[in-house]
Length: 446
Ligand SMILES: *[C@@H]1O[C@H](CO)[C@@H](O)[C@H](O)[C@H]1NC(C)=O
Image (cartoon, rainbow, N blue to C red; front, side):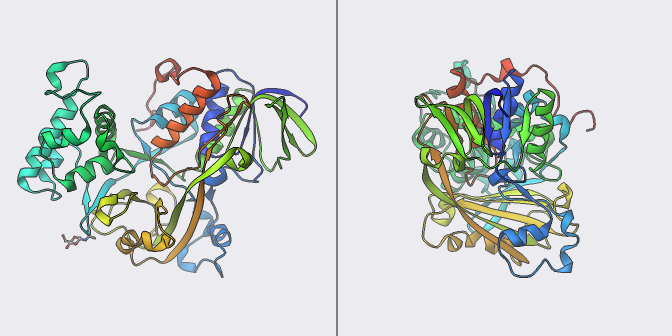
């Protein structure tokens, strides 16, 4: 171990693996360690099913109806990838896609007044949606046309809106959209977690809605992708990739100390030996004294023997319950997968419900989502603390990731990655520059 690395990475969560991959691609010498004997840290995929029962301290073992335990890979923190989103671009940059197979998620749904509706995001879908009345449909169609023609550099397309000034609230007003339409547009298309965006300039929201529509246009059905066999494939793909760049991955390495000199990290001590480095990336669990708790998230993994009601029997889907619809401050997210993604055994469905905790009774908070999933065969409930770095690394050169939030897509994780990248290198994360090679994420097969 007595070697000197440019970067040492601790923890094999997705954020750490992607940063480790990006640093390798940039020619840095990287050592990547995890104290656990498995990949993924907080975002691990659990297999076989028996291990999930043990992890959640459930009595007994899975019933025979669950099939073979080793046919299950259950992600503790499931998230979908936007087809045109930042994570897909990062995966293409690192070329880790060669180790993965992705499949499109079959549908994207939103909850309104107790019922489930498909999220309309094209003008044609908007006109046939039962989510809105006839007049509202026309107005929403006009709004979508405005969004798709919107070009901030071409005043003709702006219809009097000033992208960096006009608030989104005023844009909704301009198109005379009602509260329910505003709810699903902000939360199921633009994927905001709260309503704070309403009073911000509209440019960011319009860009997000376009990302949704463009991702949807790419593969149809939904804008989301998910790897076959689950997200656990990602860290393993990165470990294989790292070897090509001369990097080293080590699991099961107890971390005894972050070695500091004059307030700056110079190495990591593991099993009595020190590996030296210039910079360190880690998840909060490796540097608790430099992070603080910023909230709590509840996640409930539900095993069912049926798809979610009123989703046209989709084999996989995302469902968002906007905060307003259930009198909350944070949205509730549900993502469901099945054997179509080789996750559980045939005939079983895994839905994971997540949200930010707002009260002392988190299970009560997610009841509206659980009610939509009943009957549920088995539930696995967990609440976890979310941490954010306090030390931003300027002096210490220790760069700490944020815990995974309740969202069921990767856009916030990617923002964290870009932020850490900028703090480490002093330069913006430039996708265009890093896209050395363009290719389709499905490779040649589809
Ligand atoms: C499902 O659809 C039926 C028929 O349209 C409707 O009555 C019911 O409220 C819907 N339930 C949910 C949960 O969406």
